[in-house]
Length: 118
Image 1 (cartoon, rainbow, N blue to C red):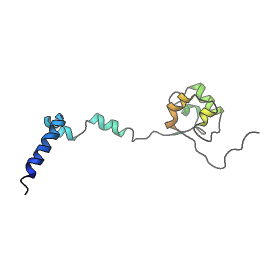
Image 2 (cartoon, one colour):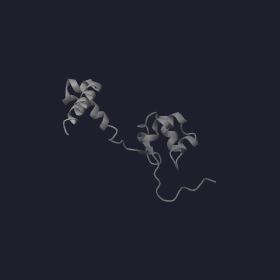
Image 3 (cartoon, rainbow, N blue to C red):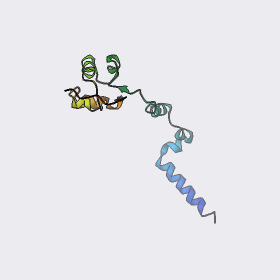
Image 4 (cartoon, one colour):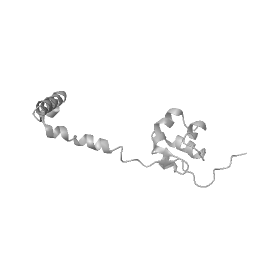
């Protein structure tokens, strides 16, 4: 009974090699990803530190993409923020500028929310 399986396994193996020529050239290289790809794959896993827009200094804010002296001053001047999107709703940043940095910022709340200004 195992004999009919041998030609089937052989034809499946040959089909795989034909579909991926790199396997036929050097199976060891095909199994191991290149070092550069491995480094790029692990880079997103190393999460960057999120910047709290309610507490960050102007210097810290300027490390964010698209944030210079003027934008950092506007962010500090419009505090406190309840959400990250307040940067747009309070007209501190344009929607495009917000999109560039939204994955790098956070708003942390401790204690009761701030009272609205009269």
